[in-house]
Length: 455
Image (cartoon, rainbow, N blue to C red; front, side):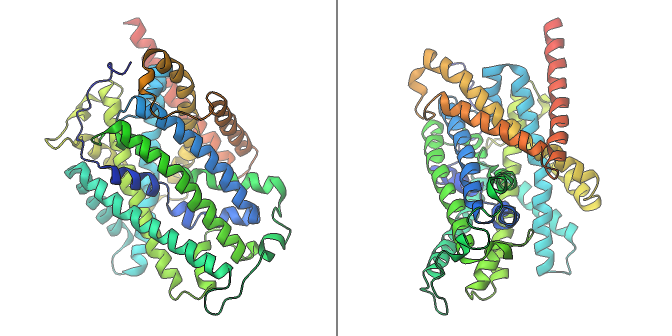
């Protein structure tokens, strides 16, 4: 099984430190720093439980993906695994859906970063900032993979420093050690309706609000194929990422709901800013603005990288135009990068021109795609694990915990989240539009299979 994988024509310029930081930083984005306010507003202090549940699902997916990527490293990662486990239709479908997801989300990140930059320099219009960001990161991704790695390393380092500083300051404030603060005790956790003010339904609503913030973890396994030792690199990156991310997410939520009454949270406002303001950190809003700005640019960079490698891998397997296979002397798939950027530019233009109509439909069409991708990862792992155990057990250097029980539990949890989204009026359009987009891709995959068999 291991021998049948073709040699990867891409560069091997990513180091272990790049991958470890990519694993940690790739998932720490604006969804955590700003979006978590919406989760707190619906779940109250129970948001801690929501993050534990959502984080546990993401952790299981990451472990399954890590197991397959360590056994079979490939730049197409889970698209390659799905093809080997379930057939060409699965590899085609999950690859194109993930590419579409990344290039649409790229527009949200570019526009969000441009809004912040426009606030700092109002003389430069928002569209010009978008253009600057896209040109800079396209250049970085076209040059050499180590440029992408260096950008992500420093972006992730800043985000991690910000969260660690926040946790330290928050804990000092909780215990009343900071000047002008007194120990808050547990009143914010137990008062105002208790720890679960909206009951378990609030916790569930919280899970729906925060689970998509864990998207982005998958890029580590795509990047691992471009490191000098993919098998060891992916194992290390996966092991360190999942536990630390859970610590960052759950830890900072615990600090927020302990320090501030949950009823003071407003969706769209950063709870991190509210905490820093309350403990008297000067210019808290501006500091957080810088962190969110970096988080958005980091996600934009990672999504541009991930989408280019995914479409390159699809082209390698004959599932995308062959013209995308051209690789530069430095091992960079430049045409794949440009194809992803081109669609990213289209998404940005739609976001700037029709944010509430055309782009909203596109965003809804990828809203639940992450869950479909995760479900296919889990199904692939269940199928491939048995085969790898039979054919090449020595490649199982990173194993899924309690296989197959936790693999099936993760699948059941994802199915439950999708069903709950259908019953949630705000999330329902995302599920329906995403299901429509998935059905279109599956139809194309089915037609291609049928035509191949007839030839």
